[in-house]
Length: 208
Image: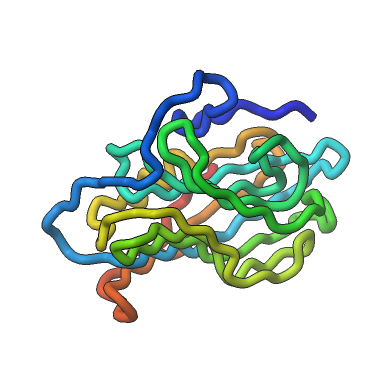
């Protein structure tokens, strides 16, 4: 199956010319509450996946700041770095149109069970040296259970004060096969300063 172009502008690496972008991010640090880690609890219900076609294909987004080009993607049921592969999952960190790091897990295509329920926690974390992105507590029929899949890139920020859940919700998309997805929901968001939870948000419906 050919790769499907993403609607996320900073993911279009295969369709634009190469840009010279420094690998170390230099975000603007706002003076606000310090959040060193942000977690999103997700539930996705896939009503009728097509394992033969490898659909649906879903891309979930988290960005430190919606105004900046840096961002993270969690791909479900496909990967596209360094080339397209159907099935499995992949986490990615981008700067503009440059993918700085990626890691895949699983090869099975969705469709092992009708009305398959996927649950996991997606997160970003900063420590003044690195931006870490990944997921924990993945539970699924197709890929089994998996904990703590993560990647990191150099990143100078010590906080994530400009993160916005609505940006994740509006830019997390079903790339192919939306009719096969019953629902996508962020059940809760937790904000941490170190090991201390300092804030939380309740449910956000992403799809439909």
